[in-house]
Amino acid sequence: MRMNSIISIALRLIAAILMLQTLYFKFTAQPESVFIFSQVGAEPWGRIGTGVAELISSVLLLLPATVALGALMATCMMAGAIATHAFVLGIEVQGDGGLLFAYATVIFLASILLLIMHRHQLSVLKAKLFPK
Image 1 (tube, rainbow, N blue to C red):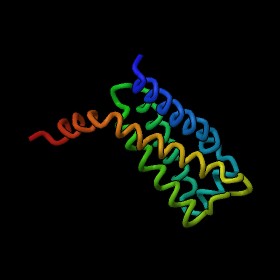
Image 2 (image 1 turned 45 degrees about the horizontal axis):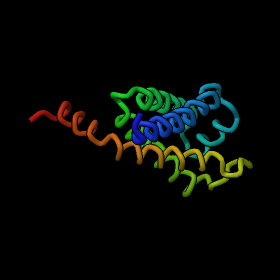
Image 3 (image 1 turned 180 degrees about the horizontal axis):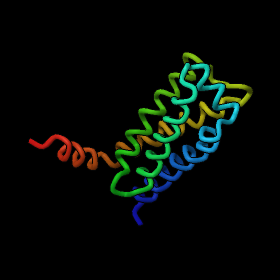
Image 4 (image 1 turned 90 degrees about the vertical axis):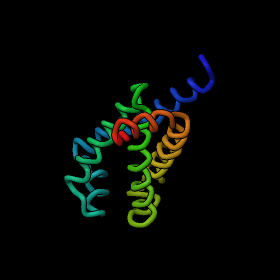
């Protein structure tokens, strides 16, 4: 197996696992998630919608043919999460030591690298969505 393939698989697993493990908190309305989405005025639909989007993104990341689309979704979502932490919530939320911010940052960076590594998939997607 080539080194690029190994790195891609590792980045995909890291991003997907981090997003998937937070779904329990979002979908079961755990107090931490309810607090976060209440602070930004998006409770409950923002919490549920974000969970659904993260689930879709995680599945797309794990399927080889759709890595770039999953990475694009994750990049956009994590940019929003990072901005929300930076401008609304703060880096640390309810004594988490900045863990959620760190997760968002790791997912964002992994997704950016995956977009670069799988950029050819974006060209194919663009051609399918916008035929000449």
